[in-house]
Image (cartoon, rainbow, N blue to C red):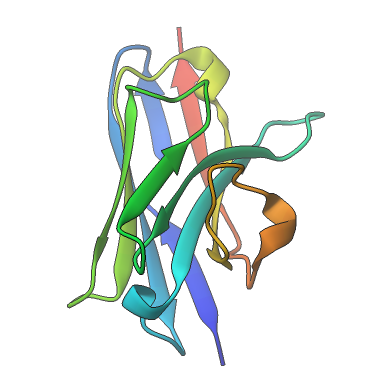
Length: 123
């Protein structure tokens, strides 16, 4: 059974950093692509980033470029999202999923979503 579980969320002040983890089971992350998405209350799900292990490519949403970095640790079968220079508008529930990673980072290309982890950034 494919399963993804996010962790690492929390509360941080503006300008701070957090690292989210996405632990995978039922498949190996180097065989698939991992995506990160977020959803704030009353808002649509927003693409954050994805990593294509087969192509060695990473893609980012415009709102996080230059601040967030996606990576993967094959030995731990875990993907990460390093988030720096966090701002209040980054407050959301963050989800990871596996599927097809492209420059468009489409939620419809991903499945097996994790339960999410809350990130709250205070001003």
